[in-house]
Amino acid sequence: MTTFVCLEDYTDAPADLLELPEDLSRKHLREGQLVKCVFKFGGYSERMWVLITHVMPEGVYAGILRNTPLFIPLVFGETLTFKWSNVICIAD
Image (cartoon, rainbow, N blue to C red; front, side, top):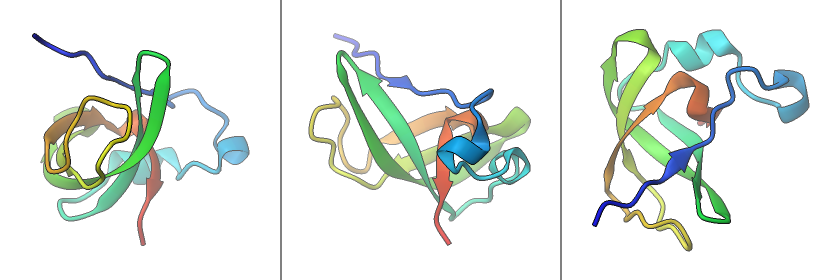
């Protein structure tokens, strides 16, 4: 059975209100960076860290989930694909 987990998109979100990183920073991430995304499933949402393992064209990334979700049907260490617009925080 396939489970669909949605990543929240923050393309047009007011960055100053949400304190998002600048679009330019989110579009030019590098392998090895740690970023936070919001995952949604059913009525639940969780903010979780993802370690970027691969940078693809057009601001698309692959990474490894670095949290153990409480409500989202994903597992620690799972490989995920996400877009720059899904990133809400970039670790220093």
